Image (cartoon, rainbow, N blue to C red; front, side, top):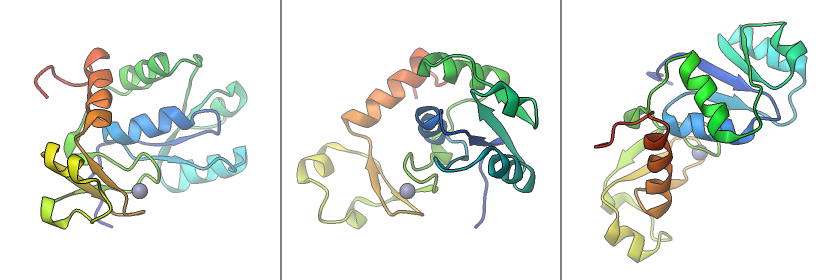
Length: 158
Ligand SMILES: [Zn+2]
């Protein structure tokens, strides 16, 4: 796959599922497998050149990593984005479920199962290259953007 994602790429430990989903929406490649052992996380980190995000100090000490102290999502996001100077990259958004890249699609390409009202109110649609899930800029999407703005990860006019 032609990968143009902004650096760095991440792998998160099993405690950081929410953080992973938000980093993906921010535009960053973040792997997250609930079942990964520490050894597997370390191996993937080395093989794929990914920074380990972990709440485990021992694991953090063993590789290229960032130890995440907080259990609060806002604070976790601030910690990672400050340390690695991350910003919202709308053109690189990834699927919160599977980490696949989101490709913008035309309204005509939106599948029939998406509610008509959503189709009429939305201006942009995206499809996940991995799991094929459809996203659009509805209420849920604007909530995500509001959080990015509140945390100063997106510009006010984005
Ligand atoms: Zn997906």
